[in-house]
Length: 308
Image (cartoon, rainbow, N blue to C red; front, side, top):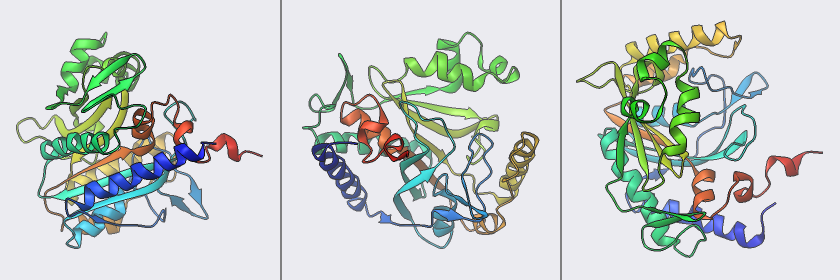
């Protein structure tokens, strides 16, 4: 259980997050957390709730609002995923998600930079902040001065992994190598955007026009910690249905019967203009800004305090 002082620091950070987005004409929304169907994603396991599901992200609802004419949306919400608790994981966590119509992932990467720098400058008295545009992580400092490094997934495998990307995919070792051999190197001198994922690993992202084997997806890393996952959103309902069908078949083959086709979402998707969106783990970002080592240190009542 965190102290009253740290609880106030968390509250101040949440206020700073809202200040950033309201200053940029984003509308804050509050969508349902309990849904009859989720977006099919094979590696994400939901919690059931009386025949429905607790949201794993607010993406489905927020994109439906965008399809109705909203232009810039953000949301701070609780999400739920069946994951083992660890230093950077809790099954219930706080997610910041935002969308900007008319943008692609390049513009969104720039805004991620501006967002993090804004929080550090606004809350520069926090233990993880070591001065203007500088984070402290243990004995090391990380410069937030831009532009931050952009590192393609293919180059990251070439630089850090024991197998090239194509071979890692063929042997189904992508996730293992990413977590064990690549992530620990990322974001220690300055934050790093890992970008251009293989299309088969980005079911909700638009393909790159110049290279359809990769999708316009990025992940943001600071101090070896993955903080955000963003896309140029796939807005073609026909292609999205095909990708969902593949996800559903793979999920069912692994015994995950929850996966179903989100028909209303697909019906709305055809009305969505070019859009970019990103989900950022607020508990992880707070961990960095507060100089903590475990997400439980930044949550008011972490899971182990709720057990009987």
